[in-house]
Length: 203
Ligand code: MN
Image (tube, rainbow, N blue to C red; front, side, top):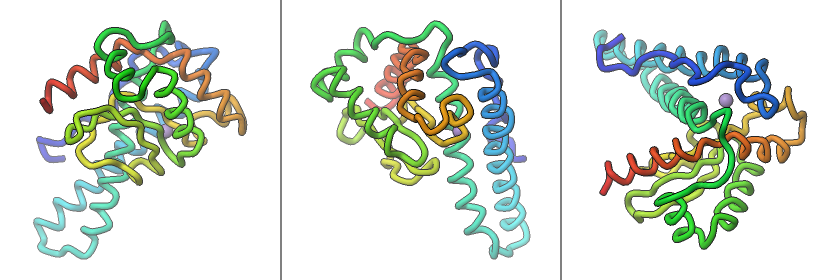
């Protein structure tokens, strides 16, 4: 693996049972150890293929590998953000500059939350709150898979995984119950840190 490659699977930032009863120990174990690990492995494998092809000068499998880098890379990065933006003592509402920015860009917290929940209900992958450095504003984005519907340049600061592996074992087809549960474990202080980092990076 090239030296500049991203490190492998980061550990969960809390115990596997830490988000119960909202997300079960079983789901977090499968989700982190099997699904997230799979995206890390897929990214590394695709990067190896690209490196081998550059070395050999045979690029027949490179376009497919580039697609695998995007799919697995976005899967890896979004899962890492998803774990980080939840916490056992989460919940409540944003405070400080993030709360002010949400009110400014969405009219109110309720206006943001209703729109985010609509994205989460409809998406075939993720609902994201992103900072758009071109328009210099927050936006909600509904993503299919890990990358379809992405907004170029935007930096995700809050991620909710609505793939079926994220909730079906705990909630069955009642995705709305899982979305409600997610809001009981959102770590708004982490989201505020992500927001500050994004704004500081781009402005
Ligand atoms: Mn997932």
